[in-house]
Structures are given as C-alpha cells and as structure tokens.
Length: 582
Image (cartoon, rainbow, N blue to C red):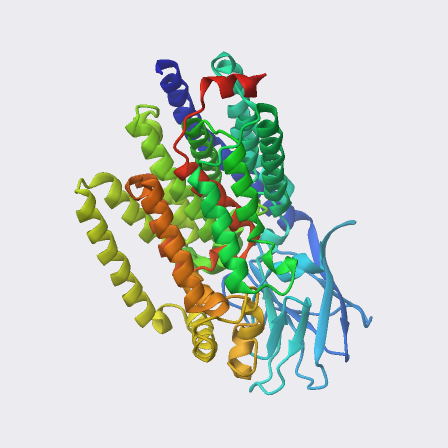
C-alpha cells in the first residue's frame, strides 16, 4: 500500500510538471507558426466550383474588425481558381473574409480546397477542413455542412454574401506537430513511470483490455468498438476455459433486459437502427464472463482522465496566451463566445465532445474519491484531479457539467443520512429541471427550437412514440417544423435532451418500462445504497437535460462500461486471478 501511494506522489508532481512543459513546447511551436506566416506567407488561393461567375474579394484585418479599405481582389482570371496575393506587412493578419459579390445569378458555391501559399510551397486544406474552419457567415449565405457547399439566400436583404474563416495563423498550424508538442511531456512521464515502478505491477489480460478501452475513449469510435469486442471475445474464451459463467451477476440481466425493452418499444425497422443498443448486449456478455479487479480499473480510469485533463489544460493555457496574437481579442472574449473558440483547444482529439468528455471526467472523480476513502489514493493526487477536472470543464464551457460537479462535491463532502441525501438530491434535481425547462428560450435558442418541434410530434403519439432512430426524420418534417425552424436546426439529428428523445421514440410506456426495470434492479441488487453508482446515475440524469447522450455509439459504449465498473461487487478471486495470469 505504501509503495502504491509513493508511486501516486510521483505521478502527482510528474503530471504538474508535464502541464508546464507542454505549455512551453506548444507555445514555442505557435511562435514559430506566427513567424512563418509573417515572413514566408505570400497569399492564398481557393479552388472552387459554382453555378455562375462571381466577383470575389478577400477582406482582411489586423484587429478583430474588418475595414472596407483592407481588401484584395482576385488576381487570376480562372473560373475555378481564386488567388489573392498579400502585401508585405510587419503585423500578423488576424482574420479574413471571402465576399462573393452581389450578383443574384449566383446560387451555389463549393470550395474544394484552400491553398496557403508560402513562397514556392503551399499548405493544402481539403474540402472538409475548409468547412471545419468556417465560423461565421452573413445572413445571405446558408452553410450546408452535410453537402459541403454554400448556398445563397437571395431573399435576404441586403444581399451581401460572405463567409469568415478561422484566423490565418490557426489555419497554418500542423495538427500533428501541435499534438506532438502537447503530448510529448506526458509520454515521457509514462515511460519513466513504467521503468521506475515496473516491478510493482502485475498486468492481467483483463486489466490490459480494460485499459485499452479506457485509452480509446478520446479516440475514434472504431477503437472503442474494437476494444469492446476484444473484451467480449476474451470473456467468452475465459468462461469456456473456466467452465463458469457469472449469471448471478444482476448487471447481465439488467443490460439484457434494457436491450429487449428498447427493441420491444422502439420497434426498429432494421438491425442498423439498433447499432448503439447492441452495446448493451456486448457488455451483458462481458459482465457475465469476465471478473474485474474493480479498484485497479478505477485507478487506470482516474489516471487516464488525469492526463487527458492535463493535456487540455496545457492546450487551453497555450491557446489563451496566443489568443490576442492570432485573433486580436482579449481573454474575456474567449469566455464570452466560448462555444466558438473552445473547439480549438480540443483539435488534437479525435473524439472531442466537450460535455461528454467532461462527464466521463466527473465519473472519474467518483472513482477517485472511492479509492481515496479506502486509502488507495494520495490526497495530493486527488486535489490535483479536482483542479485539472474543473479547469477542463471551464475551458470547454460545459455549463451542465459545472452543475454536476457542484452536485457531486456536495454529496462527497456533506455528511447527511441516507434518506436525507435522497430527499435533498431529489429536490435539487426537480428544481433545476423546472427552472431549466421554463427558461430554455432565454438560455438556449437552438434547444428551444428542437424541443418545440419535438413536443409537437410527441403530442401526436405520446404513448408509444415513433420508433428508435426516427428523431432526425421528425425534427426535419414539415408537419412539425416550418421552413425557418428547419433551417435553424438543420445540423441537428436529435432533441439534445434524452428524456424528450425517448418520449419521441419509445413513448411514455417505453420510458416507464425502462425506469421500472432500473428501479427493480437497484432494489433487488441492493445498489440503491451504492453511492458511486447512484451518483453516476444522478449525474447522467442531469446530463439528459441538455444532451441525447445515448443517441451516438461512443458515449453508449462508455456509459455501459462505467455502469459495469460502478455496479460490480465482486473482487477478483485468487483462483480466477491466477487463471487470468496464466
């Protein structure tokens, strides 16, 4: 135990130093980008296709506002190429804006690539990267990100079509180089840690596969699916080898039961509609075949989230340090328009959903306090986890996760009786829900539009819903949404509220069945006294208010994994431990 705490103290100071070195390395790289743009960049060219000729101009600015006097004309007479040559300047160009002229004949434009010109070299951004770096447009332009095209809204008065890109220096950043600068200190720390403490660790196959799953959380969904299938396959092999299946495990029946209920009330039209829900079946098999060393997996998850939060903090500090140079804005502007800018500090991640990653980190906080309560975690490392987690949440602007953090902190620190805690948490949850729902139009206009359309649909089929996977079709159905509303919510395929999404897809009867199944499981298993599991479900309930988290594969797999970790009671028996090691 003492050696374990010693290694955690090493990790505490190591992660803290890594954040500082990561900020230093990334800042040096961003300084080199700035110098390269100032000294080497000569202009840019757009490769385009359109349904009519247009007269394009490129406006640029050295501040955060455009001036009518600072613009460049297209210097090449080609239908599919626009080229703009920059004048020599001693100051960094902050932003640029592509204007499409005022000819009403123009209806559609596709930007197939954007080439940044550095002397004899060029940096090419493909069509998808171009659209990822658009962050503003006039009312005369409709950005169709699904088709990667730009359509003119000719009815808009005045007709002034233009699009604004991310700052020039931001476009010039090599994401591989930037990611390498951020991650290198943390990778070095892990190498030193493994060398220094290699004799204190015994890795089983189950441990390795669970760690692989945890590492895959911020990666592409394919990695999460692959690691789940490996866990499932090894579980089947292990059960066959030991000739034993843990069917007394209540988690198996819960996962299998929830899957059947969703299939029954969801009435899927094809197997593809249930692809997210198949995670329940996979983890049902895993829960019935694989014994986990629960506290050890908690440790891996906490450390992985600690490093992830540390890298994000380093990325955020570096970004804010260069924010004025690249954007011409102060730090207060970042937090005022955090939804616009926060994606930049997560660019190095393959899976970068701010709210979901913040919530996974919050579950790690529960695991950390569980380990600390058992004397398995150093206090300084626990404090560091709190600091990095709240930094992650604030820098990414996830308001609902700030609330969940406060709720978790209250439950962890305030000593109340079991019944009093249930009562206080119930009052808090329903109060927050009532305030949020009644003020949604003021808080979030897009969610208000999504919920309005959803409620119209729910009223027509409240008891059984429309079936799993129908959210996207319903939200963009002219029966429930007018043309103006559909245009506003065109990029969204669910209601951004899991309760409303369930009401729309499986109806009141489906939701009641799910709640009863979960309640029966908690009562029968005695898990209503499992603080970690109950807080996990409570936090998930809060997240349901703003996100339809179960509508996509990645969070569905991760939530099943976390639920399993919270719910399993057994420690790894010695005979099974030896079998796994062999």
